[in-house]
Amino acid sequence: MISYLPYIAPAAILAGATLTSLNAGARLTGFGFIFFTLGSTGFALYSLLTNDGFGLLVNSALTFINAFGIHRWLRHNAVIEDAGVRTQELSARSLCTPTVVTASLFTSAKVRCDDDMIGESVDAVVNCASGQILYAVVHRKGAHAGTGFEGFAMSDISFDHGEIVLPSGCSGGQPLDEYEWPAQLRAEPTERDAESAVTVTISR
Image (cartoon, rainbow, N blue to C red; front, side, top):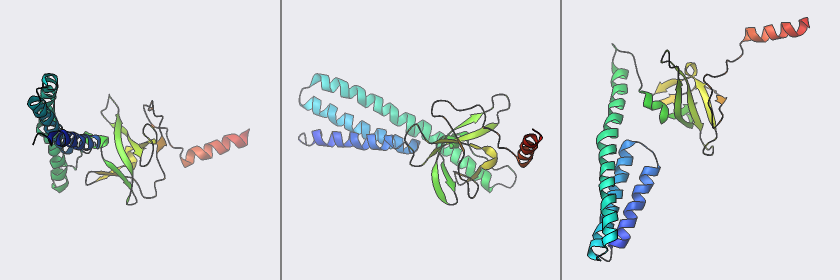
């Protein structure tokens, strides 16, 4: 058994690192911490059997930290996440209450346009005075990290089964700087604005 521990423990840690790096929800991250705990426990046991006092101390501490991660993600964050999903489902079925979504949707929801997944929502900008969500920040699928951010006004957004849906034929939102997002999106010029611009040009 002891000869297998140096292989089993790293494999468990690699599995944990893979699950947590996916950032695919609280429950999957919690399972990642379970694998982390198995790995650090394996290393602690190997250190005990080989009389490695320092390794035993470090991996015992890591086991305690990883166990806290399990509690944090599976007993706390996953409960909150599940409650939000149930709230959305119940409101969608109820005829007496408005259909609602939780704010956390804007930090993880897939974004769809014409049945194509174009990216994911990463954040939203909110008016502090009114509490109104001004626009959602979407990261384009295939864009490099730190690039490909676009802002979509709430008037262009609808929701369907935990996903954000954009209008048919949507070509894109307002491109956003990777380091600083505006307090509000630029207003799209209306037909009346275009006519005014033409009139001013002619009068000159």
